Length: 313
Image (cartoon, rainbow, N blue to C red; front, side):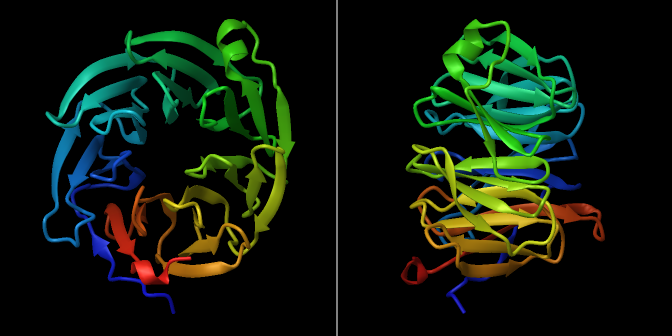
């Protein structure tokens, strides 16, 4: 058994938690819930007992997804079914901008610079210029779009799709052109691709699908180098550890699978009891945040579990 620490539970959300993410420094953890709030936690990585939080209110419907500015640890974006994206300064808890979108938002991602991509239930992907606080463009895709992400320099834009593929677009061309033309189409799953996550070094990425598989890809070669097959239900969320040595995968299985990235062998299986919606490794410690459906208690479930440094890969 790995030296897994005690599980800590954070109890502020009143309904199911859909999203969880650390900021770039690991000083804050944000969570978003069906209760229409986001919570921002501090003091979680210093052994516990000193945590504090602020509540972000303003959305009229659930906060389905959120993301941090990779270049600013106090700037957060939230996406909601109320057809808005909100930008927050978490030092004050104030909303600094509200951007209206075409539909009910279900996904959001922050580029390496000042752009945000937000996707809705109608498969519209909108690009927001954060500095100007306005929409640059909205594109409706002819296929189901789930999550979006960029490579480290922002030159390539990745979309996980309902076709079981990852569509790769040249981002500059996508911004300029009227039509979203695929640069590469990556086939690695037999059903919908739901989630995508890049390793901290940016040399590889992982994709989770409805076929219960996690595929790990080489970015330079654009080929699948490894497949993880231990889960039995659709993979909802993926996260790499700070050094890229571990990849955690979550689904409706009653455990989170933690694997060695290079070999695919299992490092740990974290029991959860309920389906998971979102997981996120701390950016500098072996500390995993995870959130999911606790319908029996009719409240949000948000937990942390850590490992001693000596048990790391």
